[in-house]
Amino acid sequence: MNKPNHKSAGLNRRDFIRVGAAGATGMALAGVGALPAAAAGQTKLLPRRRYGRTGLQISALVGASDWNPDVIPLAVQAGVNYWHKAQNWTAATMPEAIKSQPREAYYLEVVVDRVGGDNKTGHIDEEQHYQFVKQAVARSGVGYYDVFKFHFGYHSIAEARTNPGIVNAFNRLKKEGLVKHLCISQHHYKEINGDMAFDIVAYLMDHSPFEAAQFFHTYGDQKEISDIIALAKQKDFGTIAMKSMRGVGRAATDVKFQSLLADPRYKGSPPATAMVKWLLSNPNLTAAVIATKNFDQLQENLAAARAATMSCHDRQALDLLAAFNKGQTCLLCSACVTRCPEEIAIADILRYERYALDYHELSRARAEYKTLTKNGTACIACGDCLPACNADINILAKLKEVHNLLG
Image 1 (tube, one colour):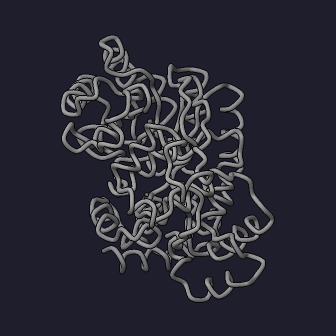
Image 2 (cartoon, rainbow, N blue to C red):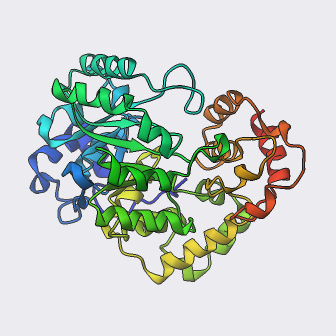
């Protein structure tokens, strides 16, 4: 979790409380000139970038429907104009700060999951996806969703090539004016003999109507991820990074790490802030979606996104975090799963560990872990996975640790 920072650019906590959520929203609609004297000259709207072939100019930080409702007025005031998983809002629960704006001032995304199972066992069903979005539009009263996003994505290039259900559902909805753009949130599927996210996304750029993709991306990632982001920029294909804060939450509560971070060389560069700057200093990446729990975390992320320029202190802070992560925090690359004779979803298990230790969402992590067909106890300690780990994790010991935490 980000450390509290009451001096970030923009509305501070005292000003926000004084004017209230409605006041902050009003300021967002009226323009920067309406800000109170205490904030005048401090507020700078988030940068916006073209979201690939969609043509949408979206905020460098993407908002999400699971954000704390109290921070959303400030996010709107700061210029957040794209909202992930907006189907979770109904007409009654959609934040006033968003819906009080002209409809063309913000972009809403509806995500569509497989049916009849989870992201691995479920299937694509054109009619059910079509009906799901129609019903979501009716519940929300928003008129349409700007982006139709296939959640978790295809299992393989072969499935993307031969199964038209998602594209057909999108085309029907687009014809009725209920959606406008087609995007994907792509995971790796090596553990079920599928393909890696970057290979699937590369295929979609040239062989499909998809216009943008969201995928895992963090500091120290595989070169293939950076390469696909650069290729996407060349081909005008939008990109959003997710699951970026690798190890940030657990480092924030680690006494040894915090003592190292206290060194003057890292002053002003907490890892979370440095991570946001690192992400957005990449001109090829469109945006990032980052879990945001509270006011201080949002303020810190906003300030970093506005800066979007890394200093040597930021780089050193990320190198310190990378050293902390080595051997304990998964990159979610899935390289290990192809070596596992028991076909254990190792990357998923360690993703759930992230939910528990980095996002502090233990209940969610335990619920996800409970759905696994094979959990950490299925490991036979053969060690076949170890040479493949890009993070030098002792996977055999780690699976036991995670099972003790989540099982």
